[in-house]
Length: 388
Image 1: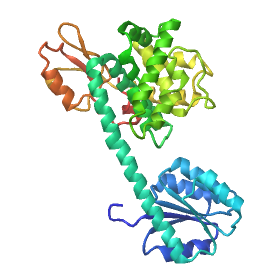
Image 2: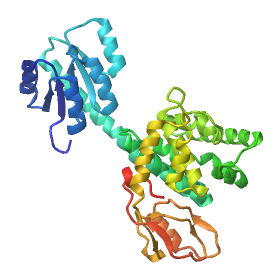
Image 3: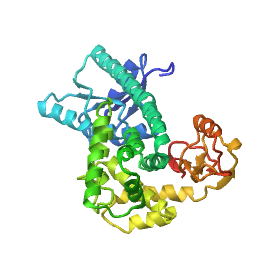
Image 4: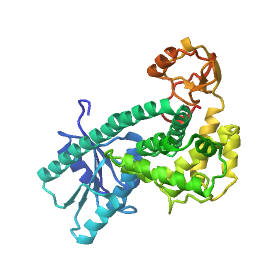
């Protein structure tokens, strides 16, 4: 909490109750109050994060159970506690199902019990934050290292993975998705099965060419093998759920990715995959977007709208020529980096890192210069998150 008191948002439609909560809890917590569910949701968005959300059950217009359910969507790490004078079993079931509450307390609740429940919620919030840090730093770092190694064996495939990663993160940012790491990792690992495929088949897939039944069967087989590899890594279930979707395992299948049949992460990755295929075949980003929009019902319209915003924001980005000696971390390659003999070393879309600069400078075959780069640093989201 960086030396600050844990922040608690208390919600009740009775002003005297809110005042009592503030007086009794302020010695241990930073207490913010809201008189309705709508006000609480607005505070979560504008003044978050909060460690704990404490809500009364019976309120006009929006019940506590409904509030906690909606709060879970917009602020998943905020721990939710429900306080109610109704001890009926059905009320408890509704709250647990809709809001996944951490504690269910009945009124009148002794102050010490209430304070202990909030303190337990604060500790749960700390554990959730530690788990997120583990995922974002440790697991994400390990996957990125794996991708860097695999990029040495197939720079084209894993250069594409880097472009896909930035696309899905940028779209997810536009859609205000809180937990983007499963989508980001799925994009990075999407070419994992391609390592086992014959090179001509990989080129056909990337070019968007029609595949034979035998080729499609081979793709299904290596996708299953890649899934088995990921099964050995803890906490990868959300990533595997995305990559195992049929619309992703059949790259050219003309099927619709609907919310009823396809998770949101897979729908975003599908759009990114097909956009990149079109761009790789010579379409400009606006042309590729228009081609996707020409198939109403096949792609999620909301995702296409977010993608349109990303592409529009990128149109002003300038491509510049840079000598190898001028490459700096954070630059994005606007074109493939090749040796003087024409061999691809790094694919377009790759983010320049210290490791990449050292590797290119150590290459004995000579690098074809100048190198085309986008000089704006990647920020991991928004307009700068997909530059390639």
